[in-house]
Length: 512
Image 1: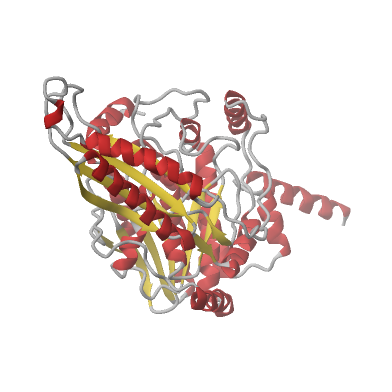
Image 2: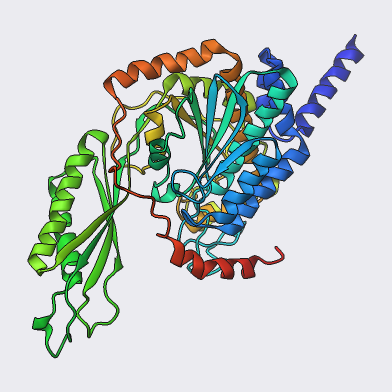
């Protein structure tokens, strides 16, 4: 008997040591009776060849580093991968060439998975290098991990599809390939086009330094608008009185909005960049453009936006020029994450567990933390706890996922891979989202997504909890889009930048 116990102990040790990933997750499995469908997706995603396949897809998208609505290669790679796996893929949807929806199955329930794949401007960085060292100076980079996010959703969806075939699971799984999240531009247009009609629940995901989820209201609602002013040219020295400077209007508007900050609630955030201010100092500019992000709570956003528009009108009036256009790039709500969804996702996050990081991965994280002047703590070893929201929402970023949360019960699975203390939208984050740690993180995320999708497809009681909460919440929070009815997707907004850097990035990474 004693020898048998020793043998069993050794066998268990070897299993925990050799299965990539998650000793803590496997220990949790030992305590929980696992449904065969859920075990299937976890086993499928745990295969070394699966981890490698989707890791390489994520790395490839990292290399493409395509800006919003210019993600032609990234979108095609993801859509082709899903199509090859047996999904029906519709492309070029909602007026956006890089938007797609991949579907498998039929009938109810319909479970949607969200995925993003766009990069950010100006933050190019070499992978795994713990100091600032761009691949191409000034080029885009994946500083938010979107390369891993739609990849995780695609991997999870294919795993669920395989389980549906193997175990006769009824229902539909959909992947919403969502471009341009960094300019918060796609989901309101996708909703308006009816792409989410009939979806019963949505699983969002996002890269993170931790592994967890949350619920409640978070982030900021946003209006993203480009204000264009038109004046008259003249010789800036010879006859300036003949001209009317459109740049003057931009500057007056900016002064006015900065004074406006004094009279806004703490929840407001306001930032802008001048994207066209003339071409030479000796010619009075007859055209100027400024791009504003106006952020606040859902309740306060529209009033704040009206006041910013008044500042634009005042700038035009004072400068004697025309406010020629106000192009609303996007307009989105805060996130309203579903508690029942978060509770379900949390159970699966704990089941999967935090990946086991290698010595090399820990060393890189500590080197990056040292470079940033942060505590050299390395990578995390435990998943996050699910905590109740504070009830106070001040500031923060914005995401067009917010609109999705108001049309279907939704919560987000944040999966690891980012070194703690690395800075989002920064070269330090770009350095993290390529290679082995990123592969492990997206694989852990894919497992939690797939396990949650299986629960929602096979356990009507769990889906009913999400739906009941959502339907009650919708009575007091009905969806009313902020996006104007005449707004169109800004498909060419990033074209000039990508035309400039696409070839340079391909050349710099050739043979990598």
